[in-house]
Image 1 (cartoon, helix red, strand yellow):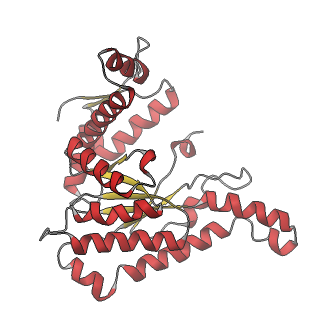
Image 2 (image 1 turned 30 degrees about the vertical axis):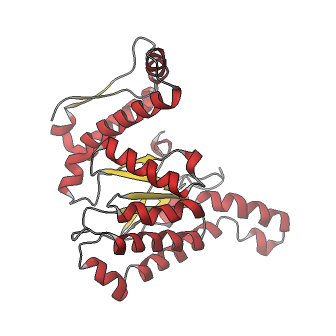
Length: 285
C-alpha cells in the first residue's frame, strides 16, 4: 500500500479526529501509510480549480475532475476494508449533480459516467429520493451499479426506494448479484425540527409531551418496513442469487435542539443491519 496524503481543512481538531479515525478503520500498521497534512502554501481546492480553469477547462469539468480523483483516492484507502468484509463495508459515496434531481434519464447517464470514471467497486452513486430519481435507481442498479439513496424523510419514499432496489436486482442480468449493493439514508432529526414547531404551535400539555418523539417513532416504523421487505419469497429468490440487503442508514442524527443530549438520536436508532451517520462534531470536547 503506497502512502496516501489527505489534505483536510486547516482545523487541528478535525485533523486529529481524522487521524484517529484512520487508525481505528485500518489498524496501527496500515494507518502508518496514511499522512494527514495541512496545506502549507495557500493551495487547496480553490487553487486547484483555478489552475484547471486556467488550463482551459470550464468550472464544472474542473470540479468533476477533482472530485473523481478524490473519490478514487478514498476508494483505494478503503479497498482493504471492502475486500475483508466481502463488500459489506468500505464504501464511498459520490453524488450525482443536484441539477439532475428531477431528471430521470440525466441521472442514469450521470451515474453510469461517474461509475465508469471512478472505476472502483467501492463507490456508491448517491442519488436523491425524488420521484424522478427513484425511477432512475432501478435502471442504475439493474446495470450492476451500487446506489446510496439519500434524502428520505418519510415512509412512502422509503418503500419506493426499497422497491426500486428490488426491481433493479430482479432486472439485473448478472448471475451473481453479490457485487451490487445499496444503502438508504433515512433522515431523523430534521423530522423533529418540523414536528416540534407544529407541536409548539398547538401548545397543549399533550402536544408538548410529544416533542422529540416523532422522528424516532417514524424510524421504528421504517425499520419494521425494512424487516418486512427483506424477508419472504421475493427476497429469498434474490438472496439465492447472492443479493445483499439494502443497508438502512440513519442520517441527520445530530441533534438540532440544544436541549436534547448530543447522542439522543444515535442511541435511539441503534439496531441490527443498520448504519448510523454520525457527524464528527459529536466526538469533539
